[in-house]
Length: 184
Image 1 (cartoon, rainbow, N blue to C red):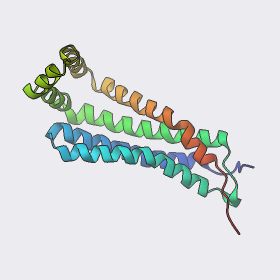
Image 2 (cartoon, rainbow, N blue to C red):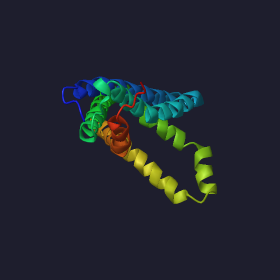
Image 3 (cartoon, rainbow, N blue to C red):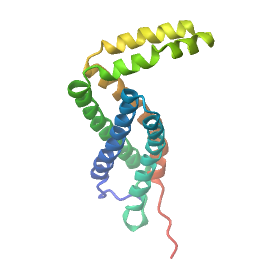
Image 4 (tube, one colour):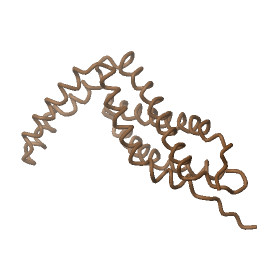
């Protein structure tokens, strides 16, 4: 049995905003890692990615626990909640990334990535592994990315966030749709 009066969309908006904030923070940490070349930021970014994988499940568990009278949300409503959750997160993060690329970056991120990958050590490592052709393709890709507009860069990141969301739709929906079992 499901509760049709439960405001799952409002919770999806709230939790999606929190998830979007978390995605934005991890994005900023990675940007700082590339721009400063500091390994600590890369480590914090990897730790943040692990948290980002767990966070939607925490929100799904929370929405499950908020159901009144020990009812379940139902799979269709849980799927709707999950889709809304991830879409709000994608939109929030996309807006923040657009602001970064359009007003704050000025091409510094792509230049920092280019410097990292054009270092003699990186070229030597790719050559020693027999990946010279891959290295030249990577250089061409970096040139193409540096020529993209702020909107196009944001769109690329939005698409990757959306793909991440699509992968997690079903597992997160399953967690949200479970019925509460309480022992009296």
